[in-house]
Length: 136
Image 1 (cartoon, rainbow, N blue to C red):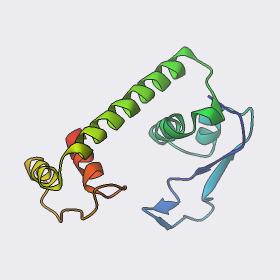
Image 2: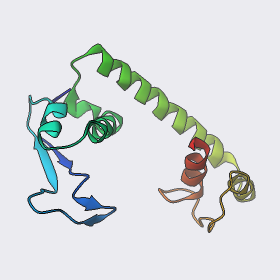
Image 3: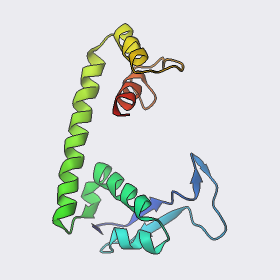
Image 4: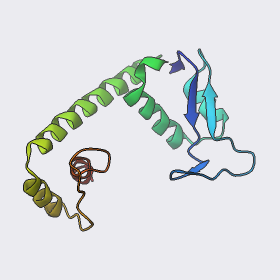
């Protein structure tokens, strides 16, 4: 996969959760310039195959218009990502149709033992938590 525009990709090794904690000589971001192969650039910067695959998957999920796919395998992965994204959207809309008591009951059935989120939507809301627990 080649970059269409300059991509500044966050270095997963330089961040511990949300805090910046680089080792000596490590940068916080990698730049991939237009026309460069994304995978090769990331591997040259010392990332493992697993880290490169994760970053490429994130690019396909969120910013697929910023990269140019080169192989049929990448096209196939893009189709799978789009299908997964659509399935997630459908399931989350189904969960959203449940009332609060039904959502809480579903959380308990899925084994959630922590504090029940107050908010229905958002990254840390009940819908996202239910979906995440269903995927495990």
